[in-house]
Amino acid sequence: MLKPYNYSYSKIQKVQSFVNHVMLDVIFNAKNIADATFSSTLVLPKYKNLIDSINNDYVLTPLAEAYIICKTLNRKQIKLLKTAVHNNNKIRELCNGDIEPVKYDQIEVININLKRAIKTFCDCLYNHCINLAPFYTVYEDINVYYKRVVKKSSVCKCCGIHKVLTQFHTHRSALDHYLPRKHYPFNSLNFKNLIPICDICNGKYKLSEDTLYITNNKGKKSESKTRTIAFYPYSRTTHDIEIEIRFNKAFDSTIEPEDIEIDITSTGNTDQITSWDRIFGIKENYKAECCTDEMRMHYEEQYIAMMNRGISHEDYIGDLGRNKYGDVNFLKIPFLEAINN
Image (cartoon, rainbow, N blue to C red; front, side, top):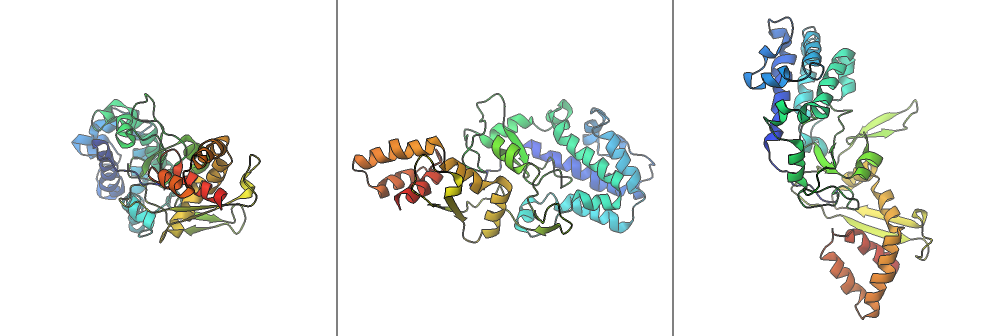
């Protein structure tokens, strides 16, 4: 992440407690419950309406299917499922590599229909339930929560280039699952796993790219996965990220990405930088930005004009640095340094 997000505490985050209770105390405890089938009477009274007042296809049916299957599972299988609930919601520890996640394909090994039922439940929570009155009247409207997180900041913190909608817009940008819900169950409504993100990062680059695993030899018989680490998006620490740009030819209007080399470094965060670039196509985006008319015009009309007025290169760069993350200045600085070298 170019900059971490500020985690805004809200009632909406308590919806994860509903997921934890239903799964840990009821579904994965089915063998110890006398009832042959699942019903809302098995959950705490405060959660009953979240099942009864929602389309059965979203909550009741997948939970009922999972309940019946879990009655047939052994202790080892149940332990894995419980671990999935616990570990997959510790987003910071997963990003740091302190614990291991449990993925849907591991649940599929236990029972493919169980995997399908759990995925339906988790997906419907985010796609449908959170936007329905039984949920948002108890917790909070997700659109209100988005505005609280984003506030007035219009810059995507993943790339630093593109825009997100702010609290002043009637619509909102995406709340992306940092650990993709395609791969990881039980955290589709964990708000430490949901980040405001621009349409370019979300819809063109990240998609369902696995944040925690690198795919080696993709599509080949020898395909394998390597566990890696990533920036935690709600970290309280802002990492100092350095960007160095080099042009392989003299800069002019014909410059193309192939003419540019970019190095991105952060002391002690080499793997996190690699993951950031892999997930969001950071270097590709930054190279493309350096080739835009806007960057060239900034150099030709703004930078050169200031030089002609007697402003030194060092002073100009210093002025940009005072507002480093505004107006793509974090990229303009190494861009102008590269031209000046």
